[in-house]
Image: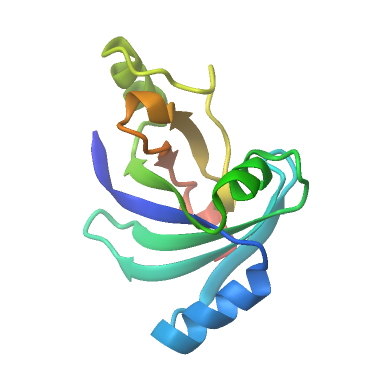
Length: 146
């Protein structure tokens, strides 16, 4: 069962400049950053708030490190802006299967590793009214380096 908005992914051309904007404008600070070679992005997670299920809600800023990455291709076509929305779940495998059973295309056969050691999969935007949707199961608190 989906429990919260885990994060909103925002594609950007310059991660440092975008982080500076969110810090100066809203006071958000980076709580985690990493390079995800598999996804072809450099990213920063900005924590917005804690949630009642023990998780948190974030903005995920994404800068491509390769033009041929999904985010790189998306930026070339659309420019900067909201790239996807991610919903938190305790069981990404089960929830992915549940939406697959309802006819929604799940982009990965098996969940992959996402930010901060999470397990993720994506739902096809054409099946979600034009919104690229991610399902996220957070890593255990001991497995992350917040």
